[in-house]
Amino acid sequence: MRFQAMMKLTGAVALAAAMMAAPVRSLAQGGGTILKPADTQKLLPSSVYYKAQVAPTQLRNSAGIKFSDGYYLLATMVDTSGYSSDVASKYQAYFITEVPLKFGSENLPAGVYGVGFVGGKFDVTDVGAHDVFSVEAGTDEALKRPMPLQIMADPSGGFRLYAGRKYVKFAR
Image 1 (cartoon, rainbow, N blue to C red):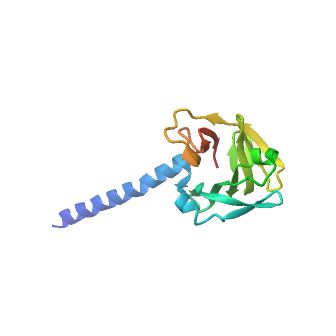
Image 2: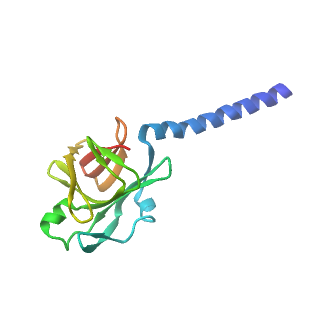
Image 3: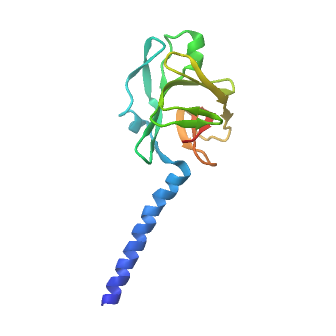
């Protein structure tokens, strides 16, 4: 009788260990949990400040990551109709990161930024519309269901921020 109870306990411990290891494996590959628009809408404001104006956010077109240590990255498309065309072309989304990130060879400190895809580049500006950096962007023709804004895990590690089929890779 004791042997059977011990085997049940051993099986339960093994099952619990396997269940605990599965999230660790996915966190090790991506570093966090990708949030859906319904999750990010609770965290993002309905309007944001950028270049001396307040613009409404498109919360239905938002994405984010909750990193394993509890910090967030949030992004949302913005209605830039009130901005000049040169600002509106670079400023397509509001980007908030509570942790430093790496985009190619560029480091982005924690903060609030305006971001956008212009041609084959991904541009990052501060909230005063000053250029922070620009990196090469890719195009994912195989993406089955492009959306205005989304974040997905990158197959080689880290994440991808998409605007339609255009994307940029980033990691923590």
